[in-house]
Length: 189
Length: 80
Image (cartoon, rainbow over all chains, first blue to last red; front, side):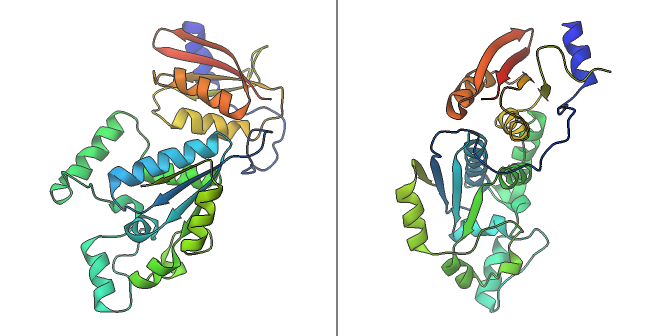
């Protein structure tokens, strides 16, 4: 046990000594790549969290992962510094009611004016659970492709510039249908 | 200070981390590794026992050993 501890403190997450090639988001397995798809419809904390956990884990397991981001599910993928977005008062009202950005998502139940998400964040921290922000960064680094829905972006008055870096090209329902039918597994969250 | 032991080429210290970060950290390191290299993973998440078995099955990597020392789980995995 002592040797184990000494070993670990000496080399936390040590990479091999030789120079490394750039990290490539390519699947681990040499077998035919499986596709995994999530339609991320909800913008709620308790639904975005599993979307990010499953998509990053599927990518880590060597699957090609696509997440179609639509409706309320778009708002967590808006840049964190955006407060009110949209062109007209109705669009502005939407983001006034629900602040966009991955760190501002609410709970489906027990939200209690933000008390619920705050407690959830505190519980997650105490239990060393990665935050949605960390999971999103991991998912992007592992090559998860997030595809925003063009129609909902237009409806909400969101531009490409409002959305975070690293998202795929916006697309529509036909793209969603195609990726879902080609996938080994697909979920609507 | 040695960075590797005779049997392992790298180590992932995922102690204290919850699902899915031990897998995410390991997979991230594996992308930079050549086939045949062996990695030692340390974790404290009890769910990682089943998860590393599942992950190695999904990715085609080899789980050489899965042991427990106190509250620490130790996995030895070879990249295939």
